[in-house]
Length: 181
Image (cartoon, rainbow, N blue to C red; front, side):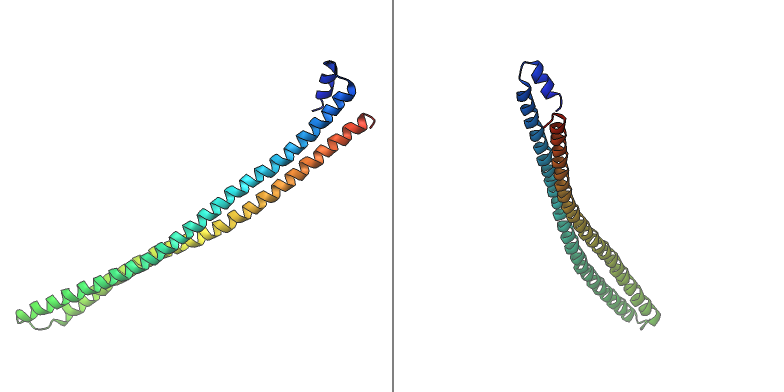
């Protein structure tokens, strides 16, 4: 901005007019820098808040999915047990029709296999639920961090505005003392 006054004097303006216009330009530039710093921080803060809201939404969705997996797992376990009871009943009926009697080893093995299948279903469901539970914790932590970032962006903008105003005041008073004012 220091170039404005000499240019205006060269164009025929009086030194006083040039100095006044230079002062106005310095003040305007300082104000614009301060407003720009605040506005920029407001936009950054808004972006962080939006990201925090999205993370909270994702956490809620993951929590709902974890609950749904639990329900589905319980249903699959029940279906597996029902199929096993039917299969064991058919084995016993076939064995009885054939006149072979009760084969305890076959019955024990069938029950064991059925419980192994049920345990595998339960374990698979627990792993899926754990994945969603981890996602909930991750997204909640992300939301907290994003909200902190939003607060820091706002603070940074105000610090930037204060810095611009301080720099503008220093420039103004520096020019004023150089001009003998």
